[in-house]
Image (cartoon, rainbow, N blue to C red; front, side, top):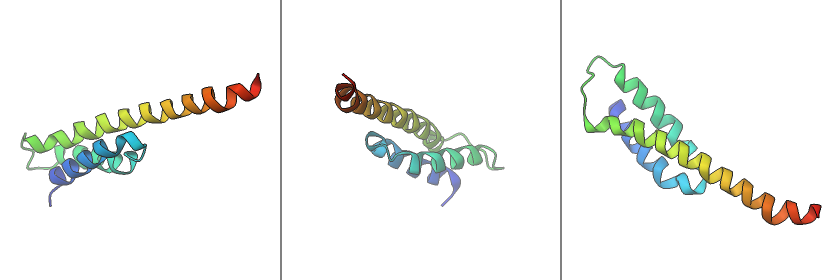
Length: 83
């Protein structure tokens, strides 16, 4: 397997796991493999570069998912205890 294929596989896994907050586990390696594939000597533009972009989207969705979880915890659990 080359770096582009690994980037795509990790990017897809990260995208599908991003709702749970565990997409970082696959998003960061997908991003690393995507960046490394662009620096390789056989630098051909192909659809497999989309793994890098899927990893970006998955990381952003993970941040959104975790922020919504923290907001819900604050509004439903912590705030009623304070007042």
